[in-house]
Each structure stands twice: as structure tokens, then as C-alpha cells.
Image (tube, rainbow, N blue to C red; front, side, top):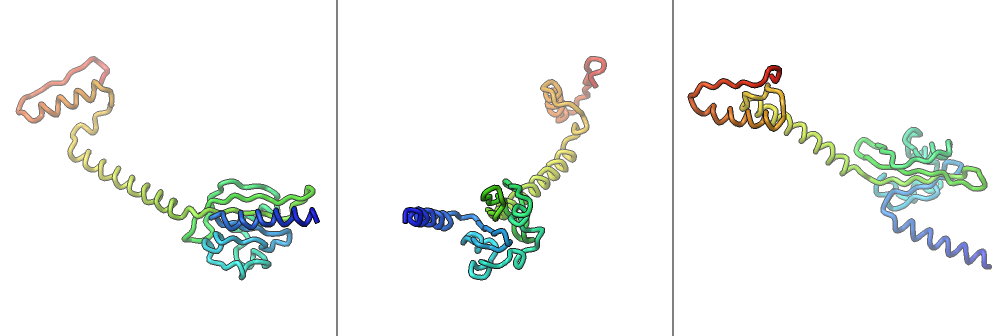
Length: 181
């Protein structure tokens, strides 16, 4: 009776945790069948719980895309591995083996959808490259001093002075110590 009550408490907590997490959480048993499939998994993978529970994970996903299956077979954990299970989906995966009496009896996989973050980073990188290219084009067209090497304060002051003088019709000779360029 006490064991049964303890089991009921653990089951209640476990079911509440599964309802609370907003990530895709799945669990496969030692026969590679899906035994847990959360609402997060339903949303990310568009597979209803009723369709996948009790069936082999390989009925729904290619073997090479199943981190939980690899974890089950090797017993190795994975932390924050970026994964692309579909062309339009990027996820971060954590996966751990379920071990009982030193034997792997299942594997848990937690996947967080990072598609929007990945796309934003790709766009940001693309835009940064464009801005850099535009800036390079502008600077090389408008700045006749672009080919002059050096970023020291003295060199910047010299370039600024020459730019001011260039607005006049004066002839100027810039000189410096031997070997300074």
C-alpha cells in the first residue's frame, strides 16, 4: 500500500512535469518504441501523440536523425547539440540514456526549437556582410587615403589634416622620419 501510494505520487509529479515543459520531450524504450511524446513534440514535429506512442521511432524518422536511438544504442549523452531534423527546422538536443541496474533500458531526448533564432542569426550575418561590402565600396570611392596603411592616432591626425588641406588649392609636402612610410 505504501509502495503504491509512493508510485502514485511519483506518477502525479512526472505527469505534471511532462505537461509543464514547453520543449519536445520524447522517450523510447529498449525496444526503440516511443513511450513518451509531449505536446511540445507534437507541435515541433506535427505528429500527434496517439499516432506515435507504442510504435518504433524509426517508423517516423530516419535512423540517422534519431538522437535518442543513438543514445539508446551507445549509452552516450548529448548536450546542446544543434540538429536539423527537417529542412525547415533547427533544434538543440539534449539526450540521456535511462539506466537501471547498470543496463540501458531507454533514452530521453529533449529538443528545443531554435529555428527562428537560427534564421535571425543567418539574416544578421547576411546583412552584416552587405553593410561591410557597402561600406568598403563607399570608403574606397570617397577616401583617397584608403590605401595608406596605419591606424595609429598620429596617422589618423595626419589623414584628417591632409583632408582639410585638400579642400584648398595649396601644394603640400608630407614628410616624416625615415622608414615610417
